[in-house]
Length: 295
Image (tube, rainbow, N blue to C red; front, side, top):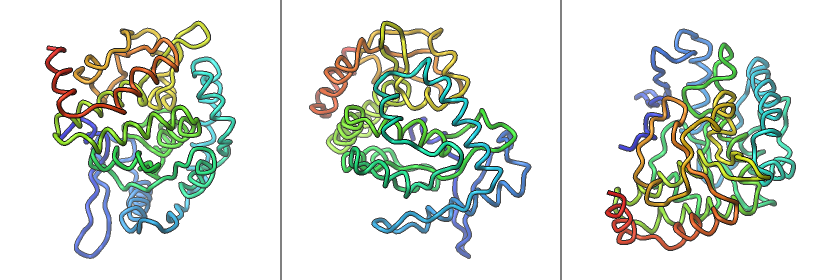
């Protein structure tokens, strides 16, 4: 199992049909029975989802909407300083609500006329081949829960803020959306788990934690940075390396802390030419050669 599996709390469906999310004892919401019940109910919506039907509505509380409003407001300020122009333009195209959590069905209805992308609810961990593969068809797996109100600016796992503010805004860009689709096609094309892991690591260091030279300074386009209140202030201090497919596909990372190694594209065109072309053409043999070259 790849490291992304640690990203989500395990979800169990019991014999009686009830769904339970197993939160770690260190999770901010572990000792909050109300939050845990909400997490179970929201996970149950995804477990019961039938593909092709409208996404079930999550009945968010006023407190949860306040968390979204606070984080959305704070991130918008930081995006003006640290986000790429392409991401900012896409954010204006999408026009997500800032005072309430949008439903995933609503997000898909906003995205589809722009780039064709729609959302699929996820209760927890989605197998890598499935998660990446459906990107080729314009689908993005997303959680629906939101972080605990006691730590609105921190989450130990990807919540709806990460999935929507981070990814949906990027997916509103024709150019970024094309890269997501190419990553999905690559995940479907490769056959071995080793090659799939390589593809996923390139995704991690680009569309999750990518940075590039934009308007003569280092700016972020990766959803993981742009949805993190703390990390967005720190990424310019990290070990910034040139964009390199072999290095990205073989570099280990720790998801439990800020990423200390990042790869810089010189421009969006550079990202498209190098990473886009890799995803468009890679197969098991070409990835095996890249892996051997990186040793």
